[in-house]
Length: 75
Image (cartoon, rainbow, N blue to C red; front, side, top):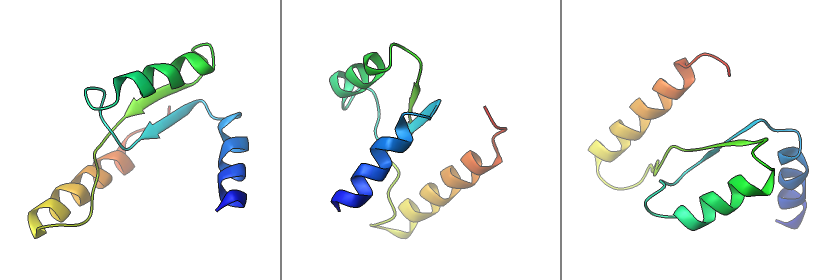
């Protein structure tokens, strides 16, 4: 776990965008704090919650969301 966390932390230094599996109304303080961390150099996009457990309908909605994200142009 530590090795994976460390690799992720190092990679975030070169990231321009981070997608977060949450929404602003749920974790506004954490999202704002992360946004201030990089002096605005890294854009944060809360795109969640995306889940894959529960009813079949929830899985279908998550799959549609992920397909939509995959179709978006870079940047």
